[in-house]
Image 1 (cartoon, rainbow, N blue to C red):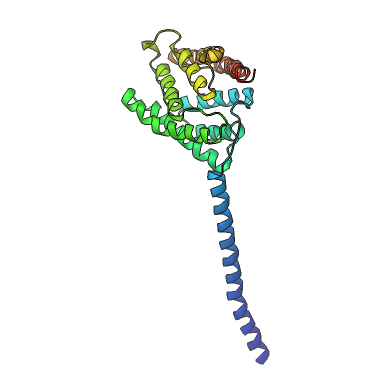
Image 2 (image 1 turned 90 degrees about the vertical axis):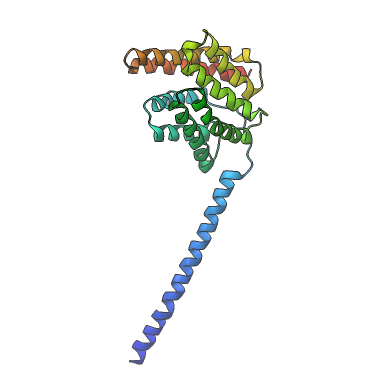
Amino acid sequence: MATATTTGEVTTVQKPRRRGRWLKYGAVLVVVLLAWAAYDLYAPRRTSLREFDADEVARLETAMWRSYYSRRRVKLFNELAELLRTQYRLPLLRSNAVAYRAAKAAFVFKDGKGRPDYERALPDLVSFYQSIRAVSDTDFDVRRAARLELEWWIVHRERRRHAPGDLDRALADLQAEIFRLPAERFAEHARLRAAAMEIRDTKAEQGGVTEEDWRRIDELLHRSWRSLHAAVNP
């Protein structure tokens, strides 16, 4: 009986000790995760916006266009996050937080019916460009970049109200602000990107965009982003 009682007492004492030990481990893990999250989201970083893989950007842009026009929000979000991680070198949590704001702006705009509706996307675009500016070694104007981004979206949406070349200029103006270079440097990039949009829009109006159409769009976007890379890395 004495032996059994002793064993029982040891077991009774060990259980609270084990629970206490696991609680301590859990608390330490939570602290570590919170510290990692804070570092991921807020730690200062610097990267060059000129250093990107043009072909990878083009591949992801084609994929994002397809996701956007088919209203696949989660897929668009994931593609945006991948772009931010691989090309802007944002860490995991930050890339997802920034991608969320960009995807939200895109679908707020998509559901809009006129400029007052479109303007509702601007706060998220400002937040997006603030995050890009925070890691960029180029000192661009965040609010102007956000406004120029929204403006080319509007010109593209309302293209029948605009003269030929307006979309090209709007696209070039955005890159000129981001890279702080003359807009003329981005004329070819803008022209090719606008041509890709024209194919997508025309084919959609004619009944649907085929895989062959998407292949042509992808080729134009590859040429467009290669041109931009050359323009900012002379």
